[in-house]
Image 1 (cartoon, one colour):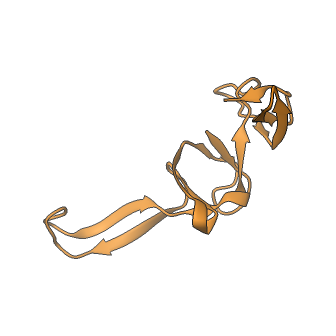
Image 2 (image 1 turned 30 degrees about the vertical axis):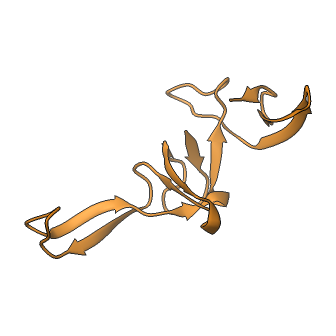
Length: 100
């Protein structure tokens, strides 16, 4: 789950559907919706206007802190990296807890 911190959808939260690593972008469920005008085809026999999510830059989202977030109040956090027992792990900068 991520929190959108910039753009038209600022303040919204959603689940990450896909990560486009080479473009540094993510697709978040219900965020940055676009309208595609499509011709009739096998998938959509009627054609028409289809709404779908467009990618947003990864710098415009923050991970939600799993320890402090509630359904009513999401708490965004930055992610840090540290070495524990010879392995590199991610942790929440707000709570200090490891992110799995």
